Image (cartoon, rainbow, N blue to C red):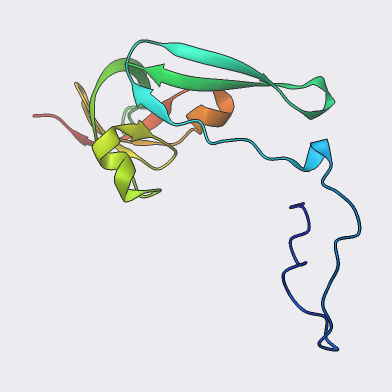
Length: 129
């Protein structure tokens, strides 16, 4: 739950809402992990309850599944074609879920969340001729 999310709004009576406490440590978010193309690098991040989140900082490889044959293979990433999350990510080659990548196998769409799970999985959209 975001911290004091509705304090900028007024009460139904028209009165102002007042801050009733300071923010707590568990209410903090974290900065997004912008996974890029490069040498394989991960980061371990301790989360609430002692859980560990593996963040993928950069990688050259992606696990691509072909929906027609059902086989999965590890292929090299050439570039980011389109990233619907942010137009700036296309230019900077940032990979997030839903990004369209150019690989040696063909065009693929990312299905995993590399900044959250530390793994880069994708499905084949069009094969390279």
